[in-house]
Image (cartoon, rainbow, N blue to C red; front, side, top):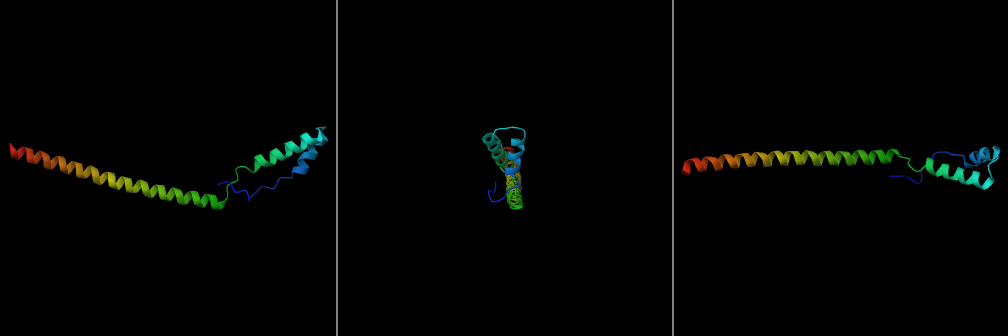
Length: 93
């Protein structure tokens, strides 16, 4: 779901320079800026991702509906079967 082609605009150079301005060592400032950029962009969800999720949800809902229908039919058949069995037992005596 994470789309590597989509990125939030994050100015790592500006970020690193701000760290350097408060006397952070260059390499540390640059490493932190890079990691912040990676963390910001790790969980981007696109409209396409949402569309895919919605279609998956629709499929699951459809499956649940079919399970309800089949379950109801099976329950009905079981009730009919026990009813017929009790009628047969009653007449057989």
